[in-house]
Amino acid sequence: MIEADFVIINANELVTLKGGKYKPKTGEEMRDLGIIKNGAIAISKGNIVAVGTTREILPEIQKGSEIIDATGKLVTPGLIDPHVHLVFAGTREDELEKMAVLGQSYLEIKEQGGGMNKSLKMTAETPFNEQLAITTKILDKMLIYGTTTIEAKSGYEMTYEGELKQLEIISTLNKIHPIDLVPTFLAQGIPPQFEANVDELVNEIAVKWIPEIAKRKLAEYADVFCEKGYFNLEQTRKILLSARKNGLKLRNHCDWLVHSGGTRLSVEIGEIVSVDHLIWTPIEEIEPLKNQKTVIIFLPTSPFCYVGKYANAREIIDRGLPVALATDVSAANMCESMQMMMTLAVLRMKMTAAEALVAATINAAHSINRNMNIGSLEVGQKADIVIFNAPNHKFFAYNYGINLAEKVFKNGVLVAENGRRIR
Ligand SMILES: [Zn+2]
Image 1 (cartoon, rainbow, N blue to C red):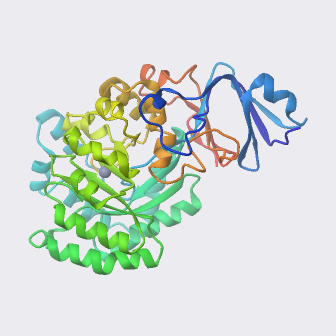
Image 2 (cartoon, rainbow, N blue to C red):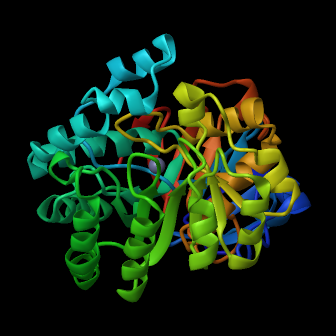
Image 3 (cartoon, protein in one colour):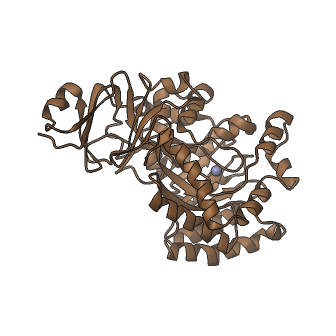
């Protein structure tokens, strides 16, 4: 007999992603979700203890366990969002409209004193507790849309004290919010006082900030805005190598606004856990990442909102590279829903619905090194589970722009239901 706190039964599709925890799914494997029709899953003490058909599992369950009926519904692992600019204050909806309607570019807005500089200023002026409250609201929205783990970046203050404060906020939220947060120090904005001398800022980051962040264990990863108007290749290299020397794992923002060569640099540095965006990167520069355990993260929101061009997902997947999806929530544009990312992946990036769901779960788990605990529904994995009010996984691209998540479980606890956080 199986002792369980509760069992979900009769799922029209139970998406297990079985076997995906050992290595990211690539190529053809991305079309195999390990679906069990009329599936059942049993949970005890926060972990998954049985997975199979309802007919197999239900008779084995000890009497007294709570039964949750998912007839006609889709059950998946909790969604994972591996690229989030989480901590910032102030919003920029006027600028987004200028970009989308008037066709002004991201860099033009920045030159007018808006964009990043506006966010750096507003974030720096916001006290810790106020920032905590703003950020909690973002996490709450993510949770009700079915996201149970995220990667969370700093980068919106870019002073020594400011970045430590941002990472402390992430650390505090990780303790008090149901969503698990994986902290990343991101060298992002360049404060006005350093604009004429970015090398000096880079030196300070490499010599002072990163060692202190590592010593206080405030970040697991370091990441760099290796982009035009931000950090150039040599500056990016210096920051990433300092981070590696100090025991941090690496990520990199590459080729988002223009083809700046960040992907080539990532290959050269080697074993970068994720390289993100890759909108303007030629495929020949992407392919060598295949041998480096790097996951490529697609971020469809800035293409959707103002960049216009999406990463070449079809070719990257067909060449066998592992890919994940993320929201890229930031001060520039905000969509907390990984469901919407799957919508865009299918309708705008030519990914199949199955590929999109793999990219939003198990491959996203690989991109933050959490694959042995989350991202698939297998015995021994943590019980991060979502019941969607949808008959199958293709509904994310079909019935879109709304919240299909009905029940969200984190570590085996029901934390959100019908669009409301309840724990
Ligand atoms: Zn980003």
